[in-house]
Image (cartoon, rainbow, N blue to C red; front, side, top):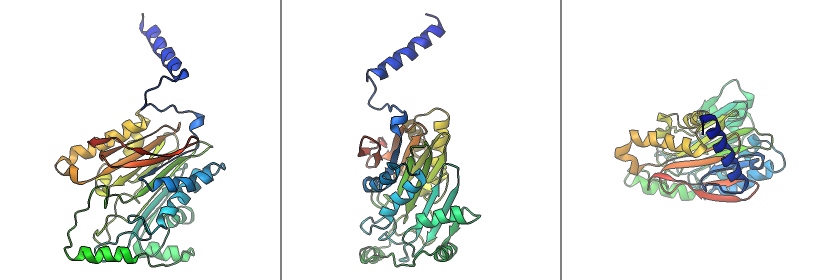
Length: 323
């Protein structure tokens, strides 16, 4: 059998296997039936997906879906690593980071923002109403107030109590999958075939005042390329920033990797550089490509992500480098 005929045989055989349903469990068949689709990080992604799905299922945009989806978690005081009720920094201040990106590569971001319930919406306002892509600290707050956002106290009694307890020892050693469980990232593909993403967090518990992680940084905590796919990250932000994690994942998909393969390679780079302390940290990525195929990978077991498509809203445990 010559090379041309062999390739044709393999191609024909593969198509036949798909046609009769003989597909590897890890293989994702991507076609128009995979649109719309939403991915989001962690268990709270399930309820966030429900909000986003109400928009996507009515032919809404991926941008509106991801903004509204993560807003639910931002406003939930029981979720102690995002928005209202988030654990404060070591000085007792709740500071928030968020970014948003649409299918035309418009971007907006805020960092170290205090007193505003929905930093993701402020980030969108930065994207749509300013010539800039990022505002931080007092400048971000001043802008938010000028746009009609309400100034509020985000430190709940429960978070304040935890902070005062922490002050007794003042040891900064976040626990993987608990205090590193610090972000909701959401990426979506709408019925028109357009991608968008959002990422929002209150950051690492008891961080230094002014610390900013990967979540508000386009290319680190979030990246969208409407020709290729989208990715978002969670976990130890410093390690994600070091490798420009989500931009890396999207570029790997551009080179032909599946979403899971791209996420895995990004995690392997983190592991290679941080082997001595890898067991103490967590990094996880989720990704979706233009065809609606999705995947994830994390540094150590314990990370899950939620997927909502036309079939169901479900939670998936990500495969990990450290078992």
